[in-house]
Structures are given as structure tokens and as C-alpha cells.
Length: 93
Image (cartoon, rainbow, N blue to C red; front, side, top):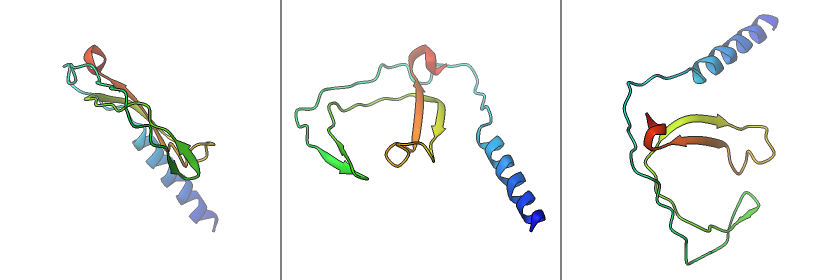
């Protein structure tokens, strides 16, 4: 049983390390345009996992994902399981 636990811990650590690895790209601006974020005329409230959500704006963006944080045990993980940091313009280089 101890051997199985050790294997599970090592496998989880290896996956976590691989998953968080740095990814390098050649220099270039891949997303030159600014995001577009028009206000919505219709503020229809909807529910997700017991939360009431009222959208205020729509958005369209072409961007590079700079980082992504995955939440599993956080208070709002059932509503927002992944938090992205995006870059556009010079930040996408």
C-alpha cells in the first residue's frame, strides 16, 4: 500500500510539474488588435451552479494566454474553474 501511495504522489508531482512548465515562442506580436467590448442591451440574468449572473458586456478578443490558474478547492471553483491572464498588442510578443 505504501508503494502505491508513493507512486501516486510521484505521478501527481510529475504531472503538476509538466502542466506548469514554461512554454517559449519565437518573438512576434500574434494578437495586434485591442479587445472589443460592447455593452449589452439585454441584461438577462441566468444561473450557474446556484449563482445568479447578469452579463453587462460582450467581448471579442484575439490574445495570447500568458498564464492559466486552475482552481479546484477555491470558494468559487465551481463557478470559475480556470483564470486566464491574456496579452494582446505588445504583451502578446
